[in-house]
Amino acid sequence: MNESKIELKTGAPRSQETDEAKFWGMVVDHATSEETPTGNDAESETLAISAVAEIEKLMGELLSARDYLNVEAERVKRENARLKNLSKTALASVHIISENLSKWRENGKPA
Image (tube, rainbow, N blue to C red; front, top):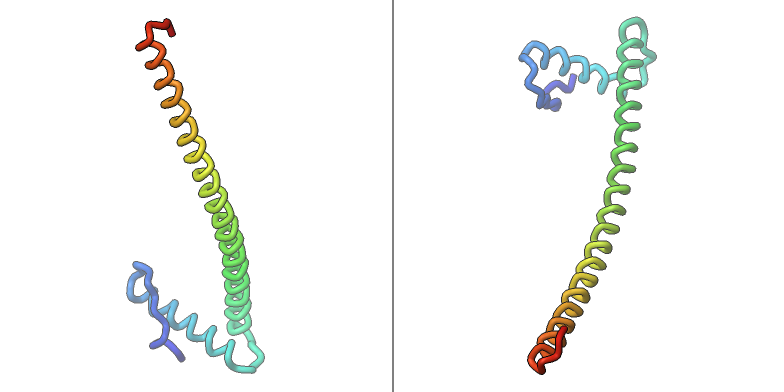
C-alpha cells in the first residue's frame, strides 16, 4: 500500500487517520491495478469513484466561480477608474466655480 505517501491534514484522531490512509491506499492500489473488484472491494471502488466524481464537479464549480470573480474584479477596476476620473472632473469644476465666485465677490458683485 501507499500509506507513506498519504498525508492527512485533518484534526482527526490517529486511529481514524490510519483507517482513512488504509482506505485511500486501497483506492490507489485498485485504481492502478487492472483487477476486477469483488465484494467489499467493489463497494470501496464505487465510493472512491463517486468521491472523485464529486471532487471533479466541485473543482469545475470552483473554476467557474474563479473565472466569474476575475471578470467581476476587472469590471470593478474599470468602474473605479471611471469614478476616479469623474471625481477629479467634478473637483476641478468645483474649483473653477469657486474661483469665479470669489472673483465676483472681490469686484463687489453679488453671487
